[in-house]
Image (cartoon, rainbow, N blue to C red; front, side, top):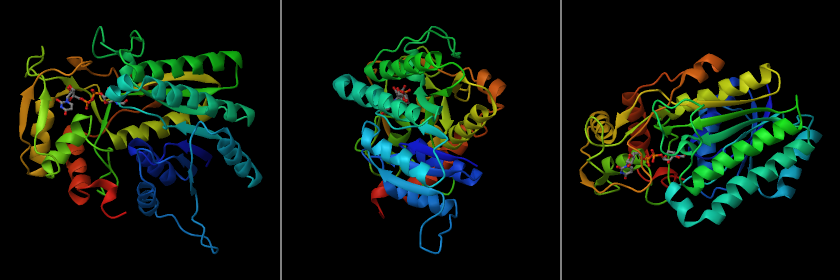
Amino acid sequence: MAQLLITGGAGFIGSHTCLVLLQEGHSLIVLDNYSNSSPVALERVAALAELSFSANGERERLELVQGNIGDRECLEQLFNTACKRGKPIEAVIHFAGLKAVGESVREPLRYWNVNLTGTGCLLAAMDSHSCRTLVFSSSATLYGYPDTTPIPETAPIQPINPYGHSKAAVEQLLHDLAASDPNQWRIACLRYFNPVGAHPSGTIGEDPLGRPNNLFPFVSQVAVGRRESLQVFGGDWPTRDGTCIRDYIHVMDLAEGHRSALECLFAEPAQVLTLNLGSGQGASVLEVVQAFEQASGRKVPYEVVGRRDGDAAITIADPASALHRLGWRTQRTLDDICLDGWAWQSANPSGYGDLG
Ligand code: WQD
């Protein structure tokens, strides 16, 4: 099993992926600045993974380091220490970054700096330590307004906001880097559609900072009584019920997709693999509300208001490439997503802030 560096590993997708990787037997160093996450998530991941402690009280296979991907000294120390221990970092899964579309429009400089410059700093450190295997957290946002749906990886890259542009720019950087050093870099760019839900234990889940931008955590917070009601952004879209349709993917399916991508990179020669991670199925806003009410037994009051800037009517993945290249496809349904999401939210009404 490998020594891995997981940037942003305390976040929603990162924490669930850390659990899957620990259960696979890997050893993890998690670098996170906790700007939009909590170290409590990783303590719970350690418990779920049933990690043991050595005689001197050190926990096996999971080390937490607080820091920024743009801090070169911090990265140098990370890689050097791992090397000195005789367990050099063999691959990186890179989640750390900013990901709120609306915020990216208001703060483009911060988004470009963290998402692009920060990733450049990470890549320089990897390269100087001959660590050239990377799984990159990309996003379906880079497709912008899709010309067709379901969307294949060959669809035009036409982002419509600074967040999407920054993800597309990192993908371009990764291609340029791989081309500059042939037969060296093994890279997977994973384009997530709409990650939602939680681990079925109800002990880890999505815990957005402040008012959620995204539908699923907002619905979840209304159901648990943290928010009054949901605003549905538009009821006049050209869809079966007038509300937008998205490809919601269970976060555990997504985590398993990262494990499969890493296995593929370790097994195959140098390449840049670009894959959509989605279910290939669509659900409307009102269908999500209904499924969540069914799963939670709670009402989710809503009002239909005007459309939100930047929204597209329908965004669904064509997931064929991930099945072909990784043998991976989603296993969990929208009902599973809502049941597991409710297990988390009902047990943690205020997220990780509840119990510390
Ligand atoms: C889903 C649908 C809204 C909130 C975004 C990012 C994407 C990815 C996933 C990072 C839309 C509607 C939402 C609300 C609503 N993140 N909605 N009321 O916009 O598809 O994708 O998150 O990679 O990059 O763009 O997800 O959950 O914000 O919206 O009606 O309070 O729910 O209009 O149709 P989106 P979302």
